[in-house]
Image 1: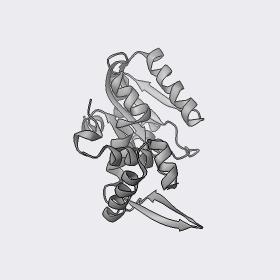
Image 2: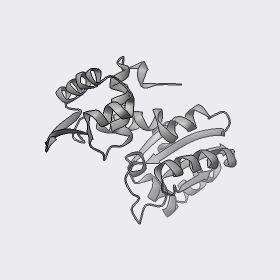
Image 3: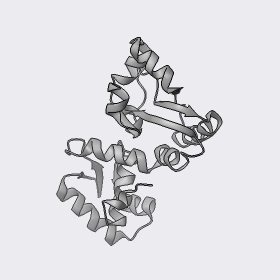
Amino acid sequence: MAELTDIITSKVRIKILQLFYGNPNEMYHVRAIVREIKEEINAVRRELGRLEEAGIIRKEPRGNRVYYSIRPDYPFYADLISMTAKTTGLGSQIISNRSKLGRINHLLFSGRFARYKERKKDDEVDILVVGEVVLPELAALIRAEESKRAREINYTVMSREEFDFRKKRRDPFLLGILSTSRVMVIGDEDVLINS
């Protein structure tokens, strides 16, 4: 399975990136980061300095503490969200249990779901799965993520034939899913949209 360690060599930096991009709306102070990722404080401070210098995170003094948060204006922000969605949480669970889940051709998270934002009223689904799926196995993974996030996850499963039929008929439900921001967890987005 592909991991962030394939391209990033510092395990502390990986843990910090996974913490921040796995919870992109949160701010952390140094000691909270140390507690969350279970690494030495000096190593955490060193990596925070490097990440701040690179423009990936920003620091903000509040009272007698300094808080860190990710910068959405960082040029690779969306790419890091996408990588984190695949290497942590539900994305990681689905990829590592892919053989038990049947034959998944494509799986996408809505952009809001990948960014841990609340679903808007007009957002219909958080996750779209295309393929021949073992539903009880998928449902078990989604239930576990629902308990972690403390909210319901809306997901839709379609066979490839149903997906192609709905796309050809310009089904409003499917077009609504495909017209919003998304993170591809499994499969090629170009093949999904243009085939």
